[in-house]
Image 1 (cartoon, rainbow, N blue to C red):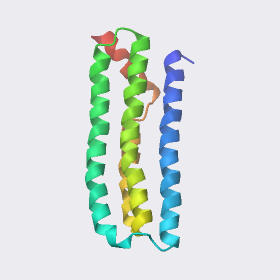
Image 2: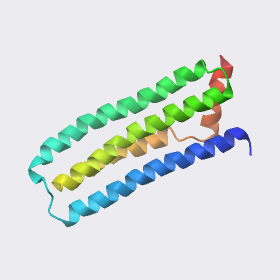
Image 3: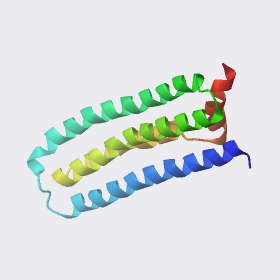
Length: 147
């Protein structure tokens, strides 16, 4: 196994851990929302639209961070520097993409509106679109050499 493949495997584990953690939070809070009396049912509309706006912002930030990562990779001086850029920006972008899932789960729990859990879809879409396959990681790490 090459060093790039090993690095890609570590990134895949991080991607899976983050999405699994958010899925667990969504599942637990969704279950609690469905099985009990919500603490703030009168805030359903406000929280739903608030989470919608924050989800759009968080998803835009996540894609912006991936774009910034690729821009900085063009100027990376070494493989070690490129790996640091991929780790830093990639994980920050995934954390930003996770935000709608967590906020949607909190809104669902507080209001009992399970539709708010649908904001988690953006996290899954982002994780799939940026999945660190061996080829994608090799491309990212090779960007500074292509210049």
